[in-house]
Amino acid sequence: MDRPPPRSETRPERWYRQVGRRGWTAFAAAWGGYVLDGFDFVLITLVLTEVRAEFGLDAVQAASLVSAAFVSRWLGGMLLGALGDRRGRRAAMTASILLFSLGTLACGLAQGYGTLYAARLVVGLGMAGEYSASATYVMESWPERTRGRASGFLISGYSIGTVLAAQVYSQVVPALGWRWMFYLGVLPALFALWMRRVLPEAEDWEEAIADTATRPNPFRPLFTRPDGTPSPRRAALHLALTACACAALLVLFTGRAPSAATAWLLALVAAAALGTLAVRLGSPDHRVLYLALTVTVFAGFLYTWPIQALLPTYLKTELHYSADQVRDVLFWAGFGTAAGCVLAGFTGDRLGPARAYALTLAASLAFVFPVFAVRDDLLLLGVLLFLLQATSFGISGLLPRYLGSHLPVERRASGLGFVYNVGALGGAVAPLLGARLAEGRPLGQSLAVLTFGLSLLVILLIGLDVPGRLHRLADRRRPS
Image 1 (cartoon, rainbow, N blue to C red):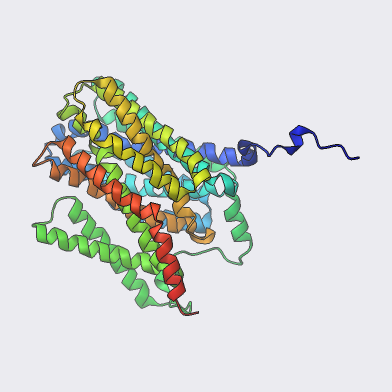
Image 2 (cartoon, rainbow, N blue to C red):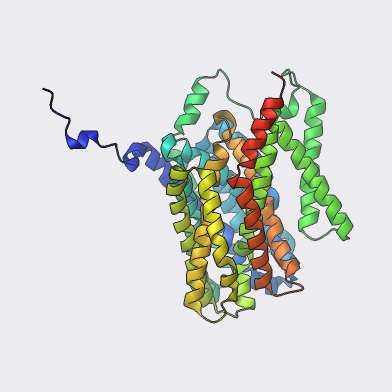
């Protein structure tokens, strides 16, 4: 009679052992990049009142400095995402960190609104590549069954970076001034050089490339005909569309549109240009999917970024908190986001990314209005912000997993980079929209209304998996 195997042999291997040394090395490097990314990006929101006072900016100009990084993100996501698909995820990660580090240094050297805005555009280019390259790199280095955790854990690094920035702000700005916050932001460049030397390449990408004779070129649909032959006319058209989108967004988000009618026209031009690029990049098989994912991400940024961009301003102007009090509140908000990202990783693997996202975001609605009802109780405000950010912004840690699951490996970095970073224009609209609404009512009230209403929209889009449903519907209608 055979003896039963030892108890230890019947137990499934723990998930963290399944990841393996290579997967954890990939995660550690990408997570560190996200920490530095969050640190660099949030700096402008922390010093916005100081910058506004020194350069004499109005509220809309100040908010546009937050929006500037989002204006260039779509282009950075497209370019660096294509680099990740063609040359590897590791090369794209390194290039992105170098870009946002140098852009942050340029912010500290800026002598006026124009040069600071230009530096923020460079930061946006780098941030876009960091998101798409790091997310695809980690998920393709982890086993399929643990990729929800990979996604959620990774995005928590961004929140830790924002917490570190708030801690540094309370020490550096009162003593040395706001520029030194940006000087410190160049340090990630050293991290990028180390990362380029020691990291292994993502396994999924290496396997996909090994099966093909040539490396993928995600831009091929932009300058070739459907039969694959070069088309100078198509190339010129898509370059013109890119230029139109860039110009329209710059005019729109620097407040240079002479009238509301012109602003709406520019918005339509930008939307048409970017939508056309999405359709062409997606090719006939994925064009509807690219558009639907972009709209979903846009709505996601609209519900999260009013608070992310304008919370420090709200705390300092309406609640009249000191630098130390702002630091304490942002600590609870950032820590809540990080905790929410970790929780999202486990719930995403257990329930699926779409269901976990929708259910957790629905729970966040209970905390939106209470957050902005608190005035003088610092502890209560911190606890409520922790809960709100954990269930609202924290659950967005599943976005890389949700988006990546819809995209093929050979175009995952470029596809994720494009749809996510075009959708991230919602982050450019959000602070400007919040600032506009606050011209007729308290800023806190405006932030609460925007966050609550747009959260409901995202619950429907992701909970019902609208992008996936539209893609399958379009696929069934396509002639075989």
